Length: 141
Image (cartoon, rainbow, N blue to C red; front, side, top):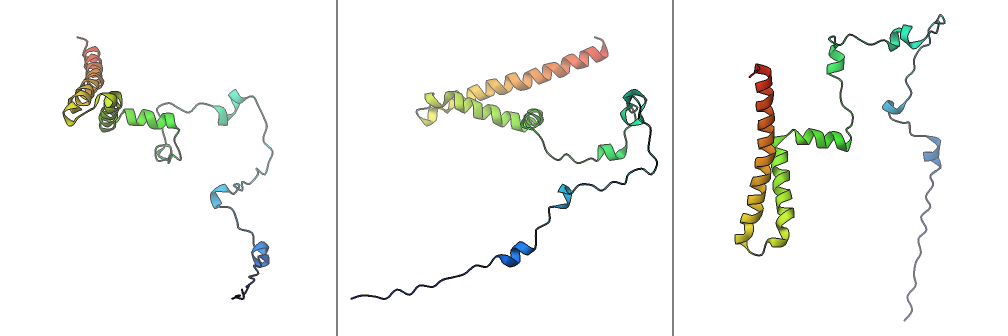
C-alpha cells in the first residue's frame, strides 16, 4: 500500500519588513546640542570654568537625586557587607559549607550551628568593638 504525500510550500516574503528599519531607543540616540553662536577662547584647564572644583560644602539637589544606573560586583559586595541580615545569612551558609563533610546524621547539626555562631560572634563583635573605639575616641576617654 503506497500513500501519497502532499507537500505544502510556504513562501515567506520579508520585503515589507526591510523597508522599515527599527529605530534605536531614545536613550541610545546622540543628544542634539546646539553649538555656541560665537566662538569661545580656549585656555589651560586651570582657568576654564568647566574644570574648576566646585565648593565642597555645596551640593545641588539634582546631584542627590541622580539615579544610579548600574553597579559593579565590588559595589554589590560592599553594600551587602553593610547589611547585617545578609552577613548573618552568608556566615551561616559558610558554616554549612565548611562542615558539610562532617554531617552524618541530624544530630550532627550542632557542628555547623556552632561554627555559624562563632563566625557571627566574631563578625558582629568586631563591628561592636570598632563602634565602641570610635565612641571612646570622640569623647576623649
